Image 1 (cartoon, one colour):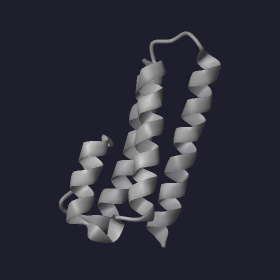
Image 2 (cartoon, helix red, strand yellow):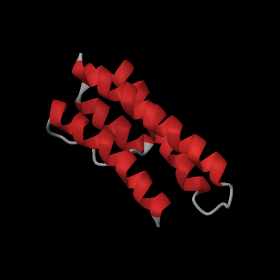
Image 3 (tube, rainbow, N blue to C red):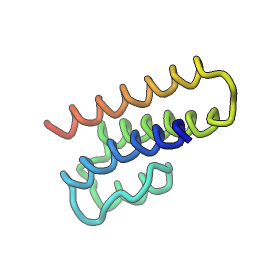
Length: 95
């Protein structure tokens, strides 16, 4: 359960500031399809922010893929990567 909540926290940490900065329509998830649809409505986000959201998406998906495994070290490494991608996104959103 803790791993699931960790994944949700990472997603919230990416979605909330992104939606706060860009408003409607909001980004409702971190799937590639959701990011593509959202970015088509926010063309100013097509470059770095778009790429960063995709990187967060891949990191979160990796966490999801590993959530049932018993290899906690690998999960923690992936979790760290996802958090680093969110931090990079937050820096981009401030500029």
